[in-house]
Length: 220
Image (cartoon, rainbow, N blue to C red):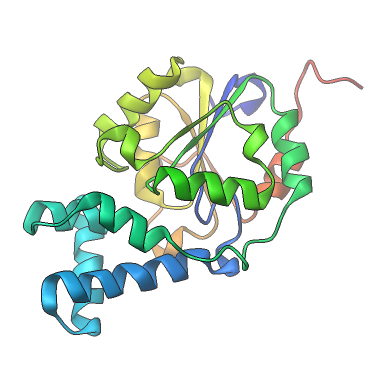
C-alpha cells in the first residue's frame, strides 16, 4: 500500500519520530542508560557504550540485553533511565493539527516506558491525537524489532496490517512492519544504517510529510 491515501490506521514510533532528533531528548536517555550500565555491570563508561551498542544490535534495546545477560530490576531500569527533563522538547501544535487530519485511528508504538511516553506526548501537545499507546511494558519488555512485539501491538489495537502505515526513525524496525503488510515510512536519515526495499517512503521531517498528504474524501 504505497498509496497512503487509502490508509485507515496510522502507527507512529515516538522518540526521534514525533519530535526531531536535534531536540536531544534521546541523548539524555542514552546518557542515563550508560550510567546505569556502568553501575549495574561495573565497567568504564566507554566500555559501557560499546556494550550498549552490542545490546541494541543483538536484542533491540539495552534493557533486553541486560535482562538476557545479567540480573537486574527491569522496573528500576525503566524508571531511572526515563526520568529525564522534557525542557528540550518543543510543543508542536502544527503536528497535532496534521495528526488529527489523518482519517481513521492513530497509535503510538514505542520501546520507551509507558509513563515516559505519556510525558513526551503531553509535552509535544499530541496526547489527545492518539487512540492508544503501546509501550515496552505492554509487550512484556520485548522490544521492536521483534516480530512478536508487532503482533502483540496489532492484536491489542485490533487492526488489519494491510490497512496501516508505520512511521519510524530506525530502518530495521520497519522490516517486521513491512513483512506484516504495513506501509512503511522512514523519518530522518536512518542514523547512517542501510535502508533497504522494506522502506516505502523516506521523509526528512514528519510534519512536512503529513502536511503533503492528500485524501480523496477530504473537503475541498
